Length: 288
Image (tube, rainbow, N blue to C red; front, side):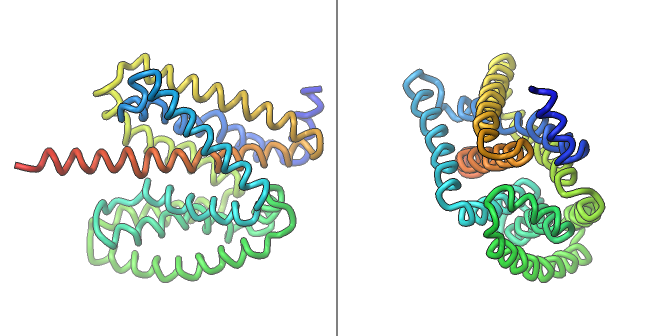
Protein backbone atom coordinates (compact mmCIF):
# COMPACT_ATOMS: atom_id res chain seq x y z
CA UNK A 1 0.00 0.00 0.00
CA UNK A 2 2.81 2.42 0.92
CA UNK A 3 4.66 1.56 -2.27
CA UNK A 4 1.52 2.25 -4.31
CA UNK A 5 1.10 5.64 -2.63
CA UNK A 6 4.76 6.48 -3.22
CA UNK A 7 4.46 5.46 -6.87
CA UNK A 8 1.40 7.69 -7.24
CA UNK A 9 3.22 10.63 -5.64
CA UNK A 10 6.24 10.24 -7.91
CA UNK A 11 4.03 9.87 -10.99
CA UNK A 12 1.83 12.90 -10.21
CA UNK A 13 4.30 15.27 -8.59
CA UNK A 14 7.62 14.12 -10.00
CA UNK A 15 10.61 13.01 -7.95
CA UNK A 16 12.11 16.52 -7.74
CA UNK A 17 8.92 18.12 -6.39
CA UNK A 18 8.33 15.24 -3.99
CA UNK A 19 11.86 15.60 -2.66
CA UNK A 20 11.30 19.35 -2.20
CA UNK A 21 8.10 18.74 -0.21
CA UNK A 22 9.82 16.17 1.98
CA UNK A 23 12.70 18.60 2.57
CA UNK A 24 10.23 21.24 3.77
CA UNK A 25 8.81 18.73 6.26
CA UNK A 26 12.03 17.05 7.40
CA UNK A 27 14.50 19.96 7.30
CA UNK A 28 12.42 23.14 7.38
CA UNK A 29 9.70 22.23 9.87
CA UNK A 30 12.02 21.73 12.90
CA UNK A 31 12.87 25.45 12.91
CA UNK A 32 9.28 26.08 13.99
CA UNK A 33 9.52 23.21 16.46
CA UNK A 34 11.90 25.39 18.46
CA UNK A 35 8.85 27.40 19.57
CA UNK A 36 8.61 25.29 22.72
CA UNK A 37 12.17 26.25 23.63
CA UNK A 38 11.45 29.92 22.86
CA UNK A 39 8.44 29.74 25.15
CA UNK A 40 10.69 28.30 27.87
CA UNK A 41 13.18 31.13 27.32
CA UNK A 42 10.38 33.68 27.71
CA UNK A 43 9.18 31.98 30.91
CA UNK A 44 5.90 30.61 29.54
CA UNK A 45 6.67 26.99 30.44
CA UNK A 46 8.41 27.35 33.80
CA UNK A 47 5.47 25.79 35.66
CA UNK A 48 3.08 23.05 34.61
CA UNK A 49 0.08 25.39 34.68
CA UNK A 50 1.75 28.04 32.53
CA UNK A 51 3.09 25.39 30.12
CA UNK A 52 -0.41 23.90 29.81
CA UNK A 53 -1.87 27.33 29.04
CA UNK A 54 0.81 28.10 26.43
CA UNK A 55 0.57 24.79 24.56
CA UNK A 56 -3.24 24.86 24.73
CA UNK A 57 -3.37 28.39 23.30
CA UNK A 58 -0.82 27.46 20.60
CA UNK A 59 -2.77 24.33 19.59
CA UNK A 60 -6.17 26.02 19.65
CA UNK A 61 -4.94 28.89 17.50
CA UNK A 62 -3.44 26.47 14.96
CA UNK A 63 -6.68 24.45 14.90
CA UNK A 64 -8.74 27.62 14.36
CA UNK A 65 -6.57 28.48 11.35
CA UNK A 66 -7.28 25.05 9.82
CA UNK A 67 -11.02 25.40 10.47
CA UNK A 68 -11.03 28.89 8.97
CA UNK A 69 -9.18 27.58 5.90
CA UNK A 70 -11.73 24.79 5.41
CA UNK A 71 -14.60 27.27 5.72
CA UNK A 72 -13.11 30.19 3.74
CA UNK A 73 -10.24 28.77 1.64
CA UNK A 74 -9.70 31.75 -0.67
CA UNK A 75 -9.61 34.30 2.15
CA UNK A 76 -7.39 31.98 4.16
CA UNK A 77 -4.87 31.59 1.32
CA UNK A 78 -4.79 35.36 0.81
CA UNK A 79 -4.14 35.81 4.52
CA UNK A 80 -1.44 33.13 4.47
CA UNK A 81 0.36 34.80 1.55
CA UNK A 82 0.24 38.20 3.28
CA UNK A 83 1.55 36.98 6.64
CA UNK A 84 4.21 34.93 4.85
CA UNK A 85 5.46 38.08 3.10
CA UNK A 86 5.65 39.85 6.47
CA UNK A 87 7.28 36.90 8.27
CA UNK A 88 9.91 36.19 5.61
CA UNK A 89 10.55 39.90 5.18
CA UNK A 90 11.09 40.49 8.91
CA UNK A 91 13.53 37.61 8.93
CA UNK A 92 15.60 39.02 6.06
CA UNK A 93 15.49 42.80 6.66
CA UNK A 94 18.95 44.17 7.53
CA UNK A 95 17.73 47.61 8.61
CA UNK A 96 16.44 47.14 12.15
CA UNK A 97 14.63 50.42 12.80
CA UNK A 98 12.61 53.12 11.06
CA UNK A 99 10.21 53.31 8.15
CA UNK A 100 12.75 52.08 5.60
CA UNK A 101 12.90 48.76 7.44
CA UNK A 102 9.39 48.03 6.13
CA UNK A 103 10.54 48.69 2.59
CA UNK A 104 13.06 45.89 3.07
CA UNK A 105 10.46 43.69 4.73
CA UNK A 106 8.12 44.07 1.76
CA UNK A 107 10.90 43.62 -0.83
CA UNK A 108 12.35 40.45 0.69
CA UNK A 109 8.97 38.94 1.53
CA UNK A 110 7.61 39.57 -1.96
CA UNK A 111 10.75 38.10 -3.53
CA UNK A 112 9.74 34.72 -2.13
CA UNK A 113 5.96 34.73 -2.49
CA UNK A 114 5.43 37.00 -5.50
CA UNK A 115 8.74 36.18 -7.19
CA UNK A 116 8.06 32.45 -7.27
CA UNK A 117 4.40 32.93 -8.27
CA UNK A 118 5.15 35.27 -11.17
CA UNK A 119 8.08 33.19 -12.44
CA UNK A 120 6.09 29.95 -12.68
CA UNK A 121 2.43 30.86 -13.10
CA UNK A 122 1.14 27.54 -14.52
CA UNK A 123 2.83 25.39 -11.86
CA UNK A 124 1.93 27.75 -9.00
CA UNK A 125 -1.64 27.94 -10.30
CA UNK A 126 -1.84 24.15 -9.94
CA UNK A 127 -0.50 24.34 -6.38
CA UNK A 128 -3.01 27.03 -5.43
CA UNK A 129 -5.82 24.98 -6.97
CA UNK A 130 -4.74 22.02 -4.81
CA UNK A 131 -5.10 24.27 -1.77
CA UNK A 132 -8.41 26.04 -2.42
CA UNK A 133 -10.06 24.53 -5.50
CA UNK A 134 -10.90 26.55 -8.58
CA UNK A 135 -11.49 30.02 -7.08
CA UNK A 136 -7.99 31.24 -7.98
CA UNK A 137 -8.93 34.55 -9.62
CA UNK A 138 -8.71 36.73 -6.47
CA UNK A 139 -5.35 35.21 -5.63
CA UNK A 140 -3.79 36.26 -8.93
CA UNK A 141 -5.33 39.74 -8.72
CA UNK A 142 -3.66 40.18 -5.33
CA UNK A 143 -0.33 38.79 -6.54
CA UNK A 144 -0.39 41.10 -9.59
CA UNK A 145 -1.05 44.11 -7.33
CA UNK A 146 1.76 43.07 -5.01
CA UNK A 147 4.03 42.61 -8.01
CA UNK A 148 3.34 46.13 -9.33
CA UNK A 149 4.21 47.63 -5.93
CA UNK A 150 7.20 45.30 -5.69
CA UNK A 151 8.69 46.81 -8.87
CA UNK A 152 8.42 50.32 -7.38
CA UNK A 153 9.93 49.17 -4.08
CA UNK A 154 12.73 47.39 -5.95
CA UNK A 155 13.67 50.62 -7.72
CA UNK A 156 13.82 52.46 -4.38
CA UNK A 157 15.86 49.58 -2.96
CA UNK A 158 18.27 49.84 -5.90
CA UNK A 159 18.74 53.56 -5.33
CA UNK A 160 19.39 52.96 -1.63
CA UNK A 161 21.94 50.26 -2.50
CA UNK A 162 23.75 52.63 -4.88
CA UNK A 163 23.91 55.48 -2.36
CA UNK A 164 24.24 53.55 0.90
CA UNK A 165 26.60 50.62 1.37
CA UNK A 166 24.52 49.27 4.29
CA UNK A 167 21.82 48.32 1.77
CA UNK A 168 24.06 46.54 -0.73
CA UNK A 169 24.26 43.13 0.93
CA UNK A 170 20.47 42.94 1.20
CA UNK A 171 19.98 44.02 -2.41
CA UNK A 172 22.52 41.47 -3.65
CA UNK A 173 20.77 38.72 -1.70
CA UNK A 174 17.46 39.82 -3.20
CA UNK A 175 18.80 39.65 -6.75
CA UNK A 176 20.37 36.24 -6.22
CA UNK A 177 17.11 34.86 -4.82
CA UNK A 178 15.07 36.24 -7.72
CA UNK A 179 17.46 34.61 -10.22
CA UNK A 180 17.35 31.30 -8.34
CA UNK A 181 13.55 31.35 -8.10
CA UNK A 182 13.22 32.09 -11.82
CA UNK A 183 15.39 29.09 -12.76
CA UNK A 184 14.19 26.41 -10.33
CA UNK A 185 10.75 24.78 -10.16
CA UNK A 186 8.55 26.63 -7.64
CA UNK A 187 8.49 23.94 -4.95
CA UNK A 188 12.24 23.42 -5.27
CA UNK A 189 12.96 27.15 -5.05
CA UNK A 190 10.72 27.55 -2.00
CA UNK A 191 12.20 24.47 -0.31
CA UNK A 192 15.73 25.72 -0.92
CA UNK A 193 14.91 29.10 0.62
CA UNK A 194 12.84 27.69 3.50
CA UNK A 195 15.38 25.03 4.51
CA UNK A 196 18.73 26.64 3.74
CA UNK A 197 18.13 30.33 4.42
CA UNK A 198 15.01 31.01 6.49
CA UNK A 199 15.45 28.08 8.91
CA UNK A 200 19.18 28.70 9.33
CA UNK A 201 18.61 32.40 10.01
CA UNK A 202 15.91 31.59 12.53
CA UNK A 203 18.07 29.17 14.49
CA UNK A 204 21.01 31.56 14.39
CA UNK A 205 18.92 34.48 15.68
CA UNK A 206 17.48 32.57 18.65
CA UNK A 207 20.32 30.19 19.55
CA UNK A 208 22.35 32.47 21.83
CA UNK A 209 19.30 33.54 23.80
CA UNK A 210 18.12 29.96 24.22
CA UNK A 211 21.56 28.73 25.31
CA UNK A 212 21.77 31.45 27.97
CA UNK A 213 18.49 30.43 29.57
CA UNK A 214 18.01 26.72 28.80
CA UNK A 215 20.25 23.63 28.98
CA UNK A 216 21.15 22.10 25.63
CA UNK A 217 19.31 18.83 26.30
CA UNK A 218 16.09 20.71 27.00
CA UNK A 219 16.31 22.65 23.74
CA UNK A 220 16.85 19.46 21.73
CA UNK A 221 14.07 17.69 23.60
CA UNK A 222 11.58 20.48 22.88
CA UNK A 223 12.50 20.52 19.18
CA UNK A 224 12.32 16.73 18.89
CA UNK A 225 8.93 16.47 20.63
CA UNK A 226 7.36 19.28 18.59
CA UNK A 227 8.77 17.87 15.35
CA UNK A 228 7.59 14.32 16.06
CA UNK A 229 4.09 15.52 17.00
CA UNK A 230 3.87 17.61 13.83
CA UNK A 231 4.99 14.68 11.66
CA UNK A 232 2.55 12.29 13.33
CA UNK A 233 -0.39 14.68 13.03
CA UNK A 234 0.51 15.48 9.41
CA UNK A 235 0.73 11.81 8.45
CA UNK A 236 -2.62 11.19 10.13
CA UNK A 237 -4.25 14.08 8.23
CA UNK A 238 -2.79 12.86 4.92
CA UNK A 239 -4.20 9.39 5.59
CA UNK A 240 -7.65 10.87 6.29
CA UNK A 241 -7.49 13.19 3.26
CA UNK A 242 -6.65 10.32 0.93
CA UNK A 243 -10.16 9.00 1.57
CA UNK A 244 -11.61 11.70 -0.67
CA UNK A 245 -8.73 12.99 -2.83
CA UNK A 246 -5.55 11.78 -4.49
CA UNK A 247 -2.29 11.31 -2.59
CA UNK A 248 -0.52 14.24 -4.28
CA UNK A 249 -3.32 16.70 -3.50
CA UNK A 250 -3.53 15.41 0.07
CA UNK A 251 0.21 15.83 0.58
CA UNK A 252 0.35 19.39 -0.78
CA UNK A 253 -2.77 20.45 1.14
CA UNK A 254 -1.64 19.04 4.47
CA UNK A 255 1.87 20.49 4.18
CA UNK A 256 0.86 24.02 3.23
CA UNK A 257 -2.32 24.28 5.29
CA UNK A 258 -0.28 22.84 8.16
CA UNK A 259 2.39 25.49 7.58
CA UNK A 260 -0.31 28.17 7.63
CA UNK A 261 -1.75 26.79 10.87
CA UNK A 262 1.65 26.78 12.55
CA UNK A 263 2.79 30.10 11.06
CA UNK A 264 0.13 32.15 12.89
CA UNK A 265 1.09 31.18 16.47
CA UNK A 266 4.75 30.99 15.39
CA UNK A 267 4.66 34.61 14.19
CA UNK A 268 2.95 35.80 17.37
CA UNK A 269 5.56 34.05 19.49
CA UNK A 270 8.67 34.92 17.44
CA UNK A 271 7.91 38.22 15.68
CA UNK A 272 5.90 39.83 18.48
CA UNK A 273 6.75 38.29 21.86
CA UNK A 274 10.34 37.10 21.37
CA UNK A 275 11.59 39.98 19.22
CA UNK A 276 9.65 42.43 21.39
CA UNK A 277 11.37 41.14 24.53
CA UNK A 278 14.75 41.21 22.78
CA UNK A 279 14.30 44.86 21.78
CA UNK A 280 13.18 45.71 25.31
CA UNK A 281 16.28 43.98 26.72
CA UNK A 282 18.54 45.99 24.40
CA UNK A 283 16.89 49.25 25.45
CA UNK A 284 17.20 48.29 29.13
CA UNK A 285 20.88 47.43 28.77
CA UNK A 286 21.57 50.77 27.08
CA UNK A 287 19.77 52.75 29.79
CA UNK A 288 22.08 54.49 32.30
